[in-house]
Length: 405
Length: 223
Image (cartoon, rainbow over all chains, first blue to last red; front, side, top):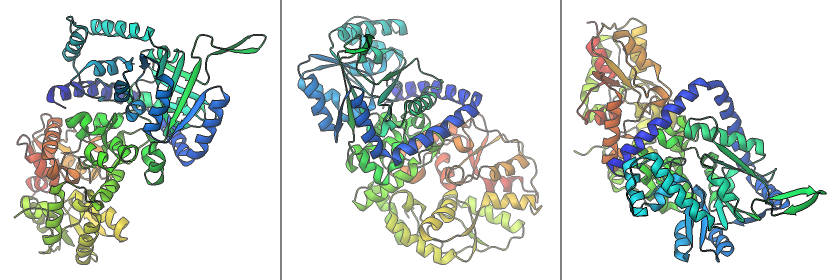
């Protein structure tokens, strides 16, 4: 990431960090209780994952949803393609899981237009030069207003002033126009209640509501998002919101447990009222079960991004220190399972200073540096390490010192 | 007592080991140094060379296992105290210079005079977050000067950027982080810390003066 982008990133991060620190001071007891509660919820989920998967499969179906279990990214993409192959355009909301499976390049290769509806995601999508996201909640945190205005000017072939309202209006109106043409909306879910068969989604813009009201709503979510009940799910996303944004509550929390329905005429169940006719849940494994075996701690993550806001390495490298929206050391650890060792190495396995700050900043205190250290052990055993480390290791073995001369 | 200097204080920044020895002598502490000191294994452990680390740790363990060990290095301290227990199954009797000097002050074996400089303290990751020793260095500094805290301190301290092999493999990342950390110190005249690796790294920024806890003690020592 270049200097300009890093400067913008630092400014955004400072706002988030200051707000979070203030909130954590003001509401210390309440937030600490919530942290402990969510740790227990997440721990239970990981320890009982297979049971929760089974419950989710059954309960979502019972509630009238279609449930598909996808072992890997390709299977998830194939399922999605079967549903949307006749469409020219589909809409989506912000989701790391959808980034993970590579839906955007896949649809491009199939000639289907994908409309990002989250403003930050949309800015990144129409920007030919940068990738991203740079923060799970603020995907365009690395862009300043002038850059965004320029991106919009290029996209809409007219001068868009570097004023936030003007940028918002022009992008919003364009997205709304495209949304009218969409029959299908694709979203992720922030937390998934297996026992209730209910999905919880969090947003500030209202875009998830629009996307989820399309005729067909496809939800792609990792099995690591499962918790037992909707109450648990609310606790998880509340903590996520606090640590992601420094605010106690997002503008919207949508709970979806069924396609649109009514029983207002003699209690006869009728479908197809205002919302989606079909809701299709794709539960994604894609390496998560593998992670569960020895690195289950990395599945505790609730996706707030608090770790990267303070991470010293992330603050000087940006999203290059991570993989497809899974950012920082925990994201790199995760990439080892959802992709492979080589991806993990290339995402920055050896760039982490193992300082442990992310653990202090993490609401569920994931010990990322321990996982990084173990993954390095495995990587070195396979022969993948920075050459400089090998040279230093040889000197230490030979003369008991890491230094030359 | 054995004074285990650690590789940086031994080979790169001997001002740290010299100040430490001077304080030890001044306080009348009976100590020894071993000439073939070798490596604690920290670098190897952090960079994934676990097998090599175990060999090196075994060799070093043979030299130090029956001693009370004093070390200048936060990395050596963490490794001896935590990793030797977890990996080698031994409980070593080890103390960091900041802890030992703080005891010497409390016991009246050394006395500090006031310093006029504005001093801040950088928590090394290996002493702070990894071992939760935040207080000993601060207690020392508060006895000789008015310690001005950086905004990011104690468990929230920003890493200097050098740890876990990043400085050797990705020096450009380390340099940028070190610049941020020095900037965190604001208008402090001296950044005191307790890890020779942090000192080596932060000094390369050539901005604020960086000192080991032993150096500032020596500066303030009532002779």
